[in-house]
Image (cartoon, rainbow, N blue to C red; front, side):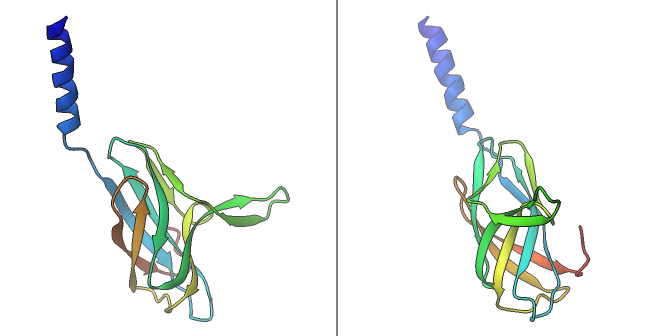
Length: 145
């Protein structure tokens, strides 16, 4: 019995010391829009390879006066809407796509014009991971990526 407990403890220590994966952020982008348009949005793909469930709890960019995590939805009458969400769940081993009409990072009070080809830094804050700074490239106004 003692050998079994020692063996189990050893396996647990090895598992805990094994290097975990990372939160993979890819394909960060936004749509171009003139300065007369006050708001914009950023989209990206998050793949949680950490082995632990996590949550994207905030995003911030100097390109925006304020940012919020949002989700798009369809009303009963078929019209589209969007609303603030407190976080975006990132289950371990899964990929979550922030895309037009769905989850996205809303940029309110744009501080700069979103010109095609420009790029903006965005700080992503996670519940369990360190804050990560990424770059989002501005695509054409009709991009769907």
